[in-house]
Length: 262
Image (cartoon, rainbow, N blue to C red; front, side):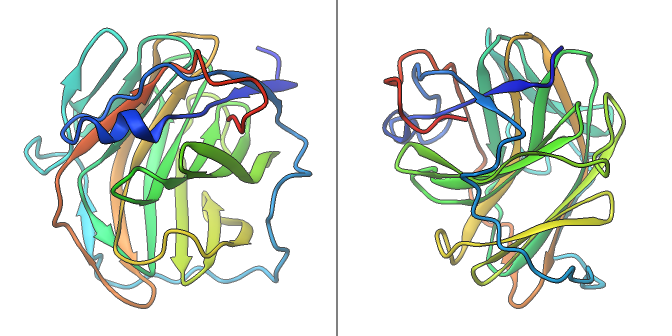
């Protein structure tokens, strides 16, 4: 598949709010975005920080126990479940986006996870964080063509904090990628496979908010993303696993042209 352009997605918070246990968004609109153009990104160049980890994680799940708290579901559009010691998000249809959370809430944290594709279909996967009760959120993703991005959703509109950006540190194809995002106050620091990518300053969605995982399909159906060793560390405060598991998806067909899309 060509790497010149990739679609990016938008999602309706009104429909998410209507189903608290399994928030399923109604049709939205899919628009193409030139991935290597980052004029709209708000990344702030900084000196490369040195990653540091708290010795004891505040939350850890290697998905070896299917009752550990992540949602499980299956329908015509998506499947999310524990599978062979990993967590699977299978996006069955094209132009569809799925996000899940175990309800973990934290502030001033670092999240790490190992992700991979288990199919050859082009898509993206990554970490959700700063998830509010209205499903405003941040999304850090990578794809199989060695690109990464960071997006922010506010009231149903998506904004590129870091547009799709090429990095040789992202492993291609079905190779495993170790993702890390650190949130300390208004600073958001992105890493992949132990390499620093960028720092963004954004003061939205602070406080005790949820974290989770995501996968997206574009032109190809059956994007199969697998995750392992989801870990939350403290970088200044603490975290708790209290909360209720939830999941959501979107098919992006009716959002008016000209809106923010991803």
